[in-house]
Length: 310
Image (tube, rainbow, N blue to C red; front, top):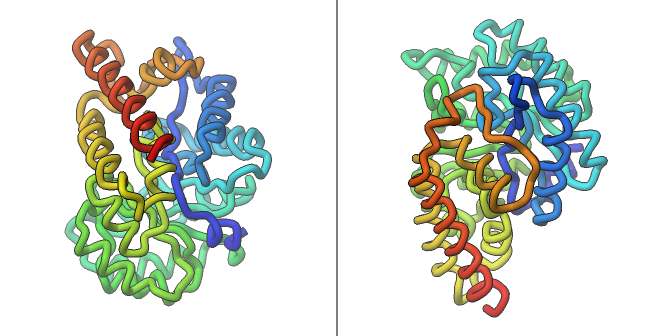
């Protein structure tokens, strides 16, 4: 399975979780969402991630979401899925092993689960080794610098431990720092580990530096522009498209993921509801909706002007 990810650059959306009005996972809505991603030519999917509201899902729900996603894709694109939301290493191992058994191409560790905020890299590395000993030896792994409950950007020492383990193939980078990304890419060179940038502002530069693609929240709004950019980094219009994407990415600060679900239902014809567990969806004001609609018009004009005819 690792070969599948090693050959797959491009856009990997961080998947949303549709909910019903009675606060249950909407399985049918999730299937429609998977199809929408694939129709927009994404390269892979990151299921059961922070955008999926994993800290507000039971383990059973997380596994069910991953299972539905794997079955619906039916091998058309590779899938990675997260799992270790618990505090104890043994519970994390149980979560990760259960996710792996479903058939994901890799299981992604949350970097902040291996040490507390105040603990140093050596503690993190020791816990990583302990956790690896508890996992299926065939499990292919990724790492995600998840911002909740705190963001732990992988240090040079921690990166060396990741590389030395020989188990990792996927990194979702959220540092939002071009210099740090270059350092990581230099460390990773020749290892087969793929780095996917979650930050739009630094994306084009990181792709030119050797990053493998985009894995961020804005692929829930307009993946087609990210797909184009990842495939056209030397195109004369690349900077123009990157500039538009950077400004549009500020919508994330509005009321995400409610705004992404509203956008998909109302502007992209994906039959899911706005309901979330991480926030009150009624806080999406009419002004917010006008901003999302204006963004959609801008994205369409940008795609028609620079991508179709560039």
